Image (tube, rainbow, N blue to C red; front, side, top):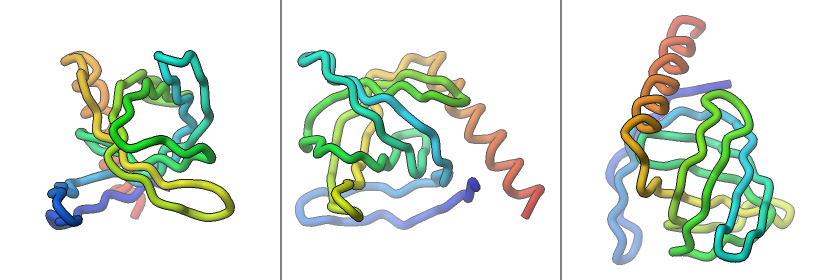
Length: 125
């Protein structure tokens, strides 16, 4: 189920992060480390224009960049940098991803997807 969420600006230690409007939407994703040619499976837990929270069963080191390929609508392949990682449950991790080097076309496709999902959620709630 998709739920729009808005959060305040948060300060974590020396880092400042903005928690904007994001959509809680589970999407299977393939995580590709293009340097080592490693493929991992994960799931997007929520997504926004600037990044996403991913649930992974592998540790993804902070600062590392990966290619994330969505296996469902909107079927985007976006580069992202790991900004934070936390233990989750049963040997899994929550991983905060900041999108980097996003093309204008992909940015528009993502914005369109998020808007359609938000409208769908507000009309069914």
